[in-house]
Image (tube, rainbow, N blue to C red; front, top):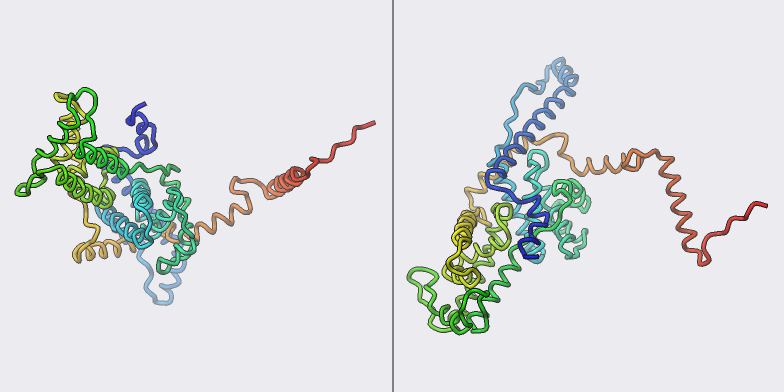
Amino acid sequence: MTEDDIYRTSTQYRLWSFSRGSIASLRSTTNASAANGVRAAIQSQHASQARSDTAKQESNEKPSDPGKEVDCLTVEEEQKLVGFYCVKAMQFADFCEFPTNVKATAVQYLKRFYLYNSPMTYHPKEMMPAALFLSTKTENHYTSLKIFASKLPKTTPESVVAPEFLLTQGLRFTFDVRHPHRGLEGGIMELLGLAQGMGQAISGIPKSSEQLQKEMVDIQAAKEGSKKSRSADEVIRRIQVAHGKAKEVGKSSALLTDVYFLYTPSQIWLSSLFLADEPLARFYIDTKIPTPSIIKPKLITTLQSCAELLRSSASANPGEAEMKALTKIDKKLFKCRNPDKVDIVGINKAQKRDSEGTGGNGLDEKVIKKRKLEREKSEKEAEDIFGPTLAKEPK
């Protein structure tokens, strides 16, 4: 089984891979559905306030205006807001000194959740801590809930975990995220091996380790005007510089764009290397795919497209103009949030109260008590070293 075959069995490929057209259509559908839900909820709220409005009219107070049209967020505004809270998640992860995989997974959880949910329904400010805390669990990085919550202002442990079930539903209960970081480390190790004269090309490329090492010294400079490498040591330094740049792309631009939805992890790390040092990336590909090849031109085109998307990434440090635009969007969101979904903590408490009476599955309270007694009895019998008491045979 090849690496491609393994990746195609992953939930990331089966459930979270899209074309540019399909992801745009999905976001548009989600936005329209949420806007309709907001308008319906607000109309229902106005209808329930009819009596109080009548009382206000009698007391000469100004009643609410049920006929006022709700100005909902656009798809572009939603994306800007979600992107901002993805940046906030990254900054908070850095503040907590979480590893890169925890930070990257949290951002992908947010981006996946808001493919099928709108900020008008669930505010990203409330979902961001839940996504980050969930990622510490799925990435096996233990973190105390109490300590985690204490690092966020005006945040309680309850408010962190309250949206967790909503989040896992939105993620379709798929928590595996395949990142490009490990692939990049492997590719850099191979390049360093080639630079040291210890690497080999794949079968079908009749070149010795010494030939490949010599060719690396002759690779054109990364940028126009920069100097070419003249020795193996200079090639190694060049690879290390490219590694650092590509790593930063993977930790920022790759997280803030849609590349995870549109490309495979291997395509993402190769594209980040393209941005860091295109001649070096092309040399690496030449050691993997013989020439001539039908695959190579297609791969180069795909990598260039991915690199262009990475280059267009929003800044991880929004400027003054961007912050003003985001503030305006947030004020607009305040007026078009779904009133039925504002208090996530309250909704979570209500669900727990309901489940206490029905067991969460519509079971009667008597049935729940009976099952509890049976379970306690079986546990007690299991603890007895000689087992349960034998029933007497009838005479």
